[in-house]
Structure formats: structure tokens, C-alpha cells
Length: 100
Image (cartoon, rainbow, N blue to C red; front, side, top):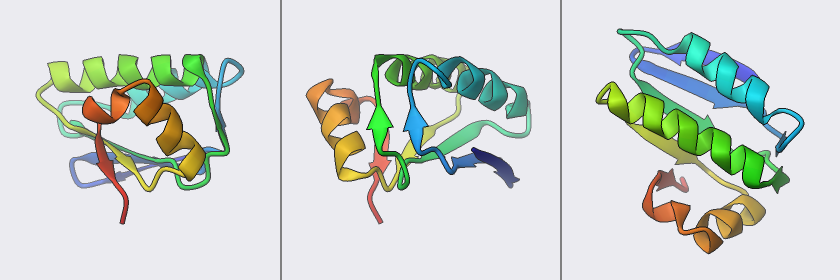
């Protein structure tokens, strides 16, 4: 997992899996990168082969954290598998999904 700051946005990339094994660490690492200047979050799921309920829970928890600070969460280029999970759970209506 790679975390970098670009202006007021925290970009998270390099997630091949987001599941029960790493969801807590992912959530904590992202929260540590957020501050008064960094209020937006982009999560790049272009490499994500597996996403389970724990991973979805971490994304939802981060969404609550970011939106409470008047920020925005975007999911970037989800793989077909991740996109399908987001649609089945109707989370594509919660998150802004950027496909290009």
C-alpha cells in the first residue's frame, strides 16, 4: 500500500486486497494521514483483486471520518471485481466512483 499527499488530497494506491487481514491497518494508516489541510481521500482500487466486508467496513468508516470534516472520498478505477462488490452492496451510491 502506498499513501501520498497531493495538495489537500490523500491518495492511497497499491491495494491488491482489502480484507479482514489488512482492513484495520489500512483504516488506521489513512486516518493518520488526514489532517486539517488534507481533507479529501482518493482510494485507487485499480489493483484490487479481492474486497470483502471488512474492507468495505474500513471504506465506510473512512467515508464517515472524511465527510465529517467536510471532505470528499473518491474510489478511483475499481477493478471489475471491486466494482461488482460496490454495486451489489449499493455503495456505488455512497462513494464517488471515478473510472477514468
